[in-house]
Image 1 (cartoon, rainbow, N blue to C red):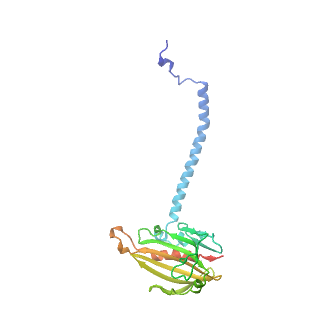
Image 2 (image 1 turned 60 degrees about the horizontal axis):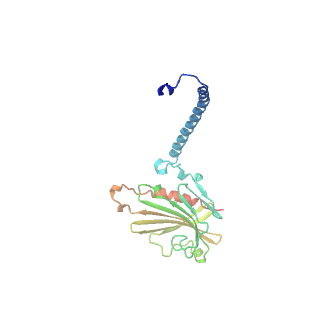
Image 3 (image 1 turned 90 degrees about the horizontal axis):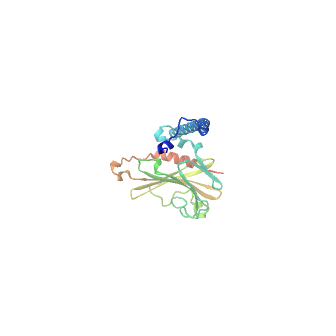
Length: 248
């Protein structure tokens, strides 16, 4: 009687019909597998290179020291055209919200609006735009009102404005003349600086304005290492956004 080891012994060096089939399959399939992995490796390598290149080209103005940055190039920004009769552009890393059916509100613009209006667009600039500083956030809004009182005092200096309110000036964007007003407020260590661009168009008062919220840097322990935020840089970007506003 054959022992168990003799029965289970496999003759690995013996050529059989099925070993020929396996060899043929491997001979045909392996080159295709290697070719496929080679293509995938090349694609992944190029993808990684593209990401690194994009990251090097999209640094902020303060990091690159260049005036030809993404935040300076309005042509590369996202354009919001979801509203009837006007459009505005903004950097794509800012958070835009369209209010398609806005309810009437007394807060459609800063200060004393004089009457209710609508606020169809809001843009939020996150704290990460000025990291490791006392910058908290900024908000840009588009507001409009056809209320008689709101229209009557649309371009007037705020009657109860703060002492720090600056004189008005004018700016022209895309054929529309805006009256520029500046307001500021403070409380509990927080500072609010508002720049309001206002104009009368088609019998309505329009306000394109932004508010920069920062905090008193002296309220933070020195070990936090916070620096004063770059107000000029932030104002420049926000003014550029306002400058893209136009009536269609």
